[in-house]
Figure 1 (cartoon, rainbow, N blue to C red):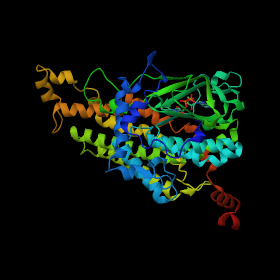
Figure 2 (figure 1 turned 135 degrees about the vertical axis):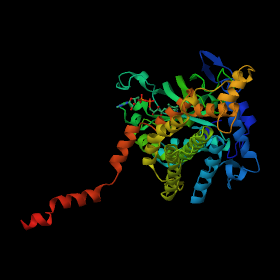
Figure 3 (figure 1 turned 60 degrees about the vertical axis):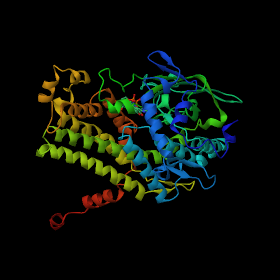
Figure 4 (figure 1 turned 30 degrees about the vertical axis):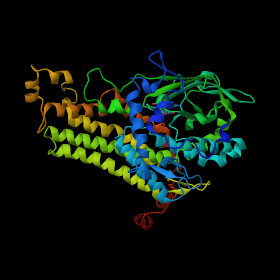
Length: 492
Ligand SMILES: Cc1cc2nc3c(=O)[nH]c(=O)nc-3n(C[C@H](O)[C@H](O)[C@H](O)COP(=O)(O)OP(=O)(O)OC[C@H]3O[C@@H](n4cnc5c(N)ncnc54)[C@H](O)[C@@H]3O)c2cc1C
């Protein structure tokens, strides 16, 4: 059956159980040089997969179902809220509230929540008429794929970037530098190459492959392609990075243990992409135009997550400050105020995206573009983390392990000298380890790097804002002022 025959009713909302079972799909997944048969059963992936499963189950909880899901009036089927095509401001705000719920549960640590990727699938659906203008089949494919992923509630990942081999070279001269279309045949296109860094790929069901802005401007049209594939497609290899979620030293790594989404390199070993899964081919202009369009909702959902991450950093910094009695000092309160200001600003940006929402050519309501807020988010990310590190200082490192706390010879010393203000040594060590996970250890560093780069190249984003910002009226006024003699000059 091709995607175009996808029935209007899929298998419906995922349950945690179905999600975990479907990860056992025979995909070619590698960790540390070894093939992983089933990520849901592997100790490096299981905790994060189970956390996703727990959150997916909340969609079925009568207490949350109406917020997290939407009943499609045409089919009667419930789909995840993020897959709902929004037509009114109320629809958009419900998507925001639903994402707020998920990201509050995940403390802002899920960059690739299913909702984030669902909103990109929604963007592909919204852009279908433009895709059809390039090739009628591609518009129909985009619509069928959206129906397939939304009605089956699939967990998705996305891959945009080329492998980091030589950024000064052109793929036309060395085709390994970018994923390319090797041939077109009656079944589809055959692609060869790699994509660098696809978050959640080991725990997702499908990957959407497209291009970031700079890569759409390349010379060879064979490098311009958008498509989607299940992660168990023959010839598709997924290589994981080193896991960051577990520690040999036991207690209190609550974030890494639950939220290490994994990042992966994808190798396409002459992979056949069936025609019904191709959305765009050899059209750089359209790919460039499409990037902002298909990410309109994900930028909004991504901002909801960022707000929650800032709120988590603020609450952690406050708890740490209180636990060592520095919360009353002016300089510490100033830093906490700076963090609180960041969190508050993210809320204004979300309100602005709603206030500037526009109806697209397909009739959906897309959040307004607040590109400057995305640049700002990357700019302040490091300073938000820095505040927690500054307040926690040496305590972020020097905490007893579970073994230390269980040692009767050490324990009296720990209780006496490693307690905090009003808290015992064990609670303090758990709190500070969480703060270290957020801001210092491998997991924290990964989250920090994510914050800096995941919105795309900061330099390019700043240049884009500069180019599109309308300065004409103030320029005009300044030029008039320069050309008009000042009163004292006129009298001379
Ligand atoms: C944790 C994490 C998760 C991510 N998740 C995803 C994901 O799910 N899907 C996905 O597609 N991507 C993902 N990314 C990739 C992310 O989008 C890229 O890291 C980002 O776009 C920057 O690209 P790069 O890492 O290849 O850096 P490069 O492009 O290699 O840049 C390296 C440095 O060189 C500079 N540079 C590069 N080219 C030029 C040039 N032409 N002129 C001047 N300076 C230049 C850059 O500014 C930068 O400082 C993720 C990245 C991280 C770290």
